[in-house]
Image 1 (cartoon, rainbow, N blue to C red):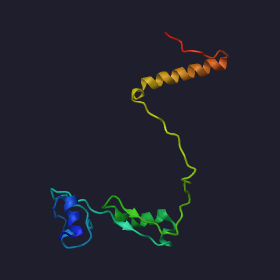
Image 2 (image 1 turned 180 degrees about the horizontal axis):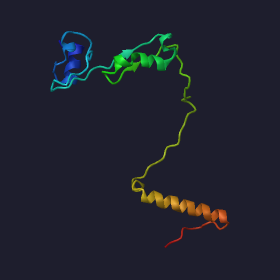
Image 3 (image 1 turned 135 degrees about the vertical axis):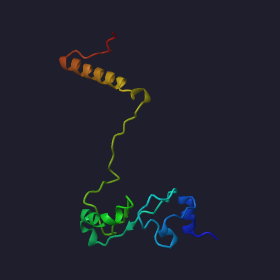
Image 4 (image 1 turned 45 degrees about the vertical axis):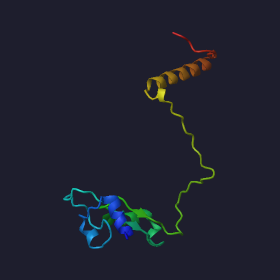
Length: 137
């Protein structure tokens, strides 16, 4: 029978157990990497669940846990259920325009040509003689 922690070790570290924190049963990744081992162990990022009082000022809370998180480089903060961010996007009404990027326009020259033609058409229409078709040189 393989426990879930053994599966975690074997899936992410190739069976290596060079981290002393993993061998003594403490939380994975509880010590910063030493660089002495040839195998890399993926450590779990710490998860924080602050109280409503601690999370009144999210930036201050993040600063307060920075030293604990620094060895990992990343963490997960689960805000209290009562917390509402000061700015929220309404997912029902929020939209943004996407641009279809054609491969033949990636070089930049085609885009420059297109911008030139658009500017030429705009210039000519402002002068009172709109272009009906593009000039051929």
